[in-house]
Image 1 (cartoon, one colour):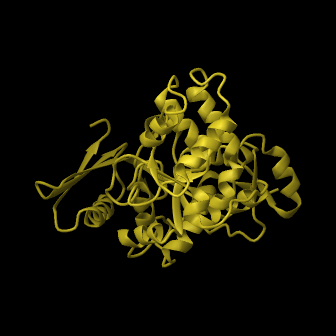
Image 2 (cartoon, rainbow, N blue to C red):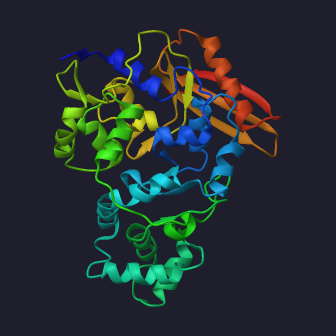
Image 3 (cartoon, helix red, strand yellow):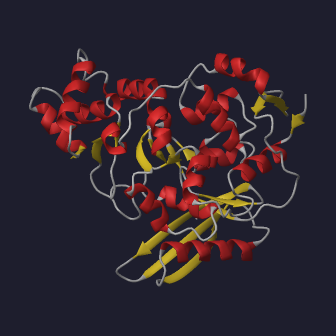
Length: 363
């Protein structure tokens, strides 16, 4: 059984994530490849695509949201993601257990004794043919159950009813209350159930080779050993340097070693969230800096590995934008880092005065 070292795993991940060279793929195809992009913060999917696609423009993703080809809703790990509408139709039922688990952890005490099937039925009635924000839905449900916690009502409804968040919510630079629409109404087609095999194959195509624990961390699904065992005859199996089994699609490419370009990844980027073992990207010490509780900070990749953090401040009133990089150690190619930072500023704030600053962490 072939043993893959960390550098080989790093290059495989970068290759499949379109981070060795910006791709000319259409945006829709890139979203499909990535399966689902973390979208808790509205600009994150745009930055993720900018890092991967040549000449990407914000309107390209926004247009896909407006024509309902791409939707935003609670999917992987029970958190907000963007995915193709076609994929949401089977992803959302597959992760229902994760959503139920998250709701129970957050609101189980205050919702003890609630009939969640009844709550789902009433929420569907209220959303039938209209879009409501979470607070509006919570207040409407409180009309039926005035003694119940408003926040728990709104969040519980989101967990038990498949909803999406129509644009302009979640589009570039647009914030505000999260609107809910019934997923089947918005998409125009029914949801349906698939087993985990489809998601495993899609994950491996985008992130492999990877372990069962890696997949579970990325997806939020639990107890996936049996699903991998069933697929094992059709998968290629490797081991990492610690003897952990890694699975991959049989025809998936393991690229030759070579340089990797500088990339600036947003917080919560797919690549950083895709593995339980993140040593293919960063040291354990760096992980404690990048991954703080539920937060995943924006990262600087140099030669495929995390070399620092970055923050961007855009003062629209002053017409200026500044990108600050906090390096963990001296950078081997500082001009390349400055060039990528300048490109990101142009993408974020064209026409503004730009400033790139490189400091040493902690600043």
